[in-house]
Length: 307
Image 1: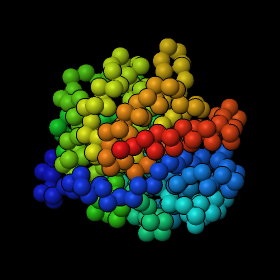
Image 2: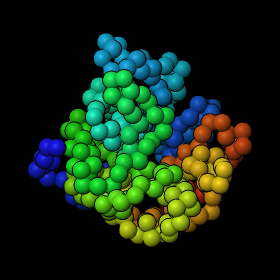
Image 3: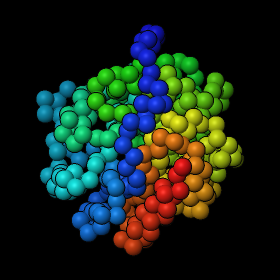
Image 4: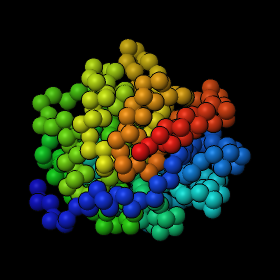
C-alpha cells in the first residue's frame, strides 16, 4: 500500500473557523411540511444528498438524475438556512474501490449549496459482487481498526479534502459484532485519523450508546477518550430493542442516556458547530410535529450550555 502523502494536517485551530450554527435536523420526507411551517426553529438542515438523486451506477453518462419534488424542498430550505451534507454513498472503507464519480458529484453540490461542512460514515457500504465492488450492503459496515486501514482511509480523506472545498467529517459507526484482535480502540483510530489528515469528527452519540449497551462498555469513558476538539457535529437519535439487542433504528425521541452523553460532549468540545436530531420517517406518526419540536428544544438547551 502506498505511503500517505506529507500534506500537513489542519490543526484543531482551523476547525474553529467553521461557523457555529446551532441545532438542526436530518431531512427525511416526513419533514417536508415541518420545514415550511417551523423552519425558524432550526439553524440549519442536514441532508443525505444520495436520497435526492437517482444513481444509475458508475460509468453511466448521465449517472445522477435529481428527483424533482425532493429538490423543490431542498431549494426552499437552501434559500433560508445553511444546508449540511451527510452522505451515505462514499463507502470510504471499501478496500478495492473508491467512487471518484460520487465524490465529484458531491463537489458539484458543494459549489451549488456551499456546505458549511460535509460528512460521511467511517464504514464501507459496498461488498464484493461479480465485479468485486458492485453490491450495496444496505448498511454501513464498520472497518477494522488497524494500521493498514488507517493508511487507506487517510489517503482517501486527503482526496476528499482536495476535491470538495468544504470541511470534511467522518462519523463513528454502529457495530453489532465486535471484531477480534484489533490493533486500536475506536477512539484511538478516530483520533489518529483526524490528527493525521485534518478532517473533523461527526460524533454520533446514539451510536456510542448503542454500542455500549450491546458490548458492555462505559459510553462516558468512550467520550472521554476522544479528542473532543476535533468534534464539529453531533448526531442524536432514538433506538429500539429487537431480539435482545438495542438497535440504531432512529425510532423517535432520544433516550435519557443520550441527553446525558450529549451534555458531556458539549462541555468538552470547543469546536462544536452543530447538534443534529435524526429519525426515520416511518416514526413521524409516533413523534408528530410537536415531538420534533420538543427534541429540537432539548437540543437547543444543550447547545446553550456549551462553554
